[in-house]
Length: 216
Figure 1 (cartoon, rainbow, N blue to C red):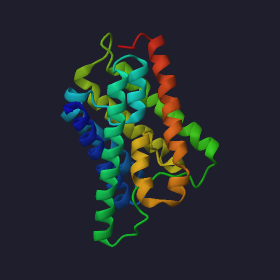
Figure 2 (tube, rainbow, N blue to C red):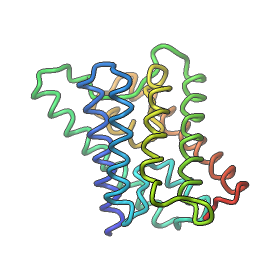
Figure 3 (cartoon, rainbow, N blue to C red):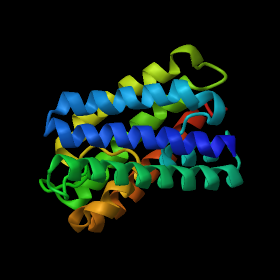
Figure 4 (spheres, helix red, strand yellow):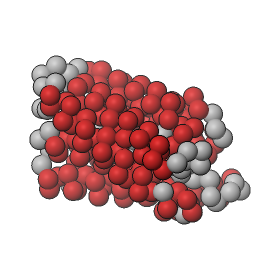
């Protein structure tokens, strides 16, 4: 139960701090990227020792493929992550209402400037790169546990900055599910991209990491 609670709280922190910054920063790409990067760094160092610090169903999928987690724990992690994201988005919605902002501005992800095919490619690509870094930096063989959290946070920040104006830079199904439930509209109808594309990227990264000898 400790592991699932850690995943719930860590995902809550990531989604709450990240999407609240999206609402407040009003398009400031650097601020948004740094917010998500710092949030996952803090969560990783605070809770990584308990659960491994996934906070993302795509990460859990990659860890399952590379046998770093069993199937039962993987299901529990993903459920905890999604619930954490939904609760975080409910909290952001209450903040938005208190500030008198539009109830549709909840930090949701969407791709109004590009088609669904390109959006899928972008999300799969950035998630692939993100997971490849995670799987290598946390490898027992050649990883660096002392700097893993910082490395992961910096990587996430850069990738979000790159993808933000195309897809919102999700890289995380839970991060998109939470806001979409409350925002509705195209964020909800396009949610399949943000669920499937990161998972595809994660699966590809898992097999690539295995080829590099980073599966444990």
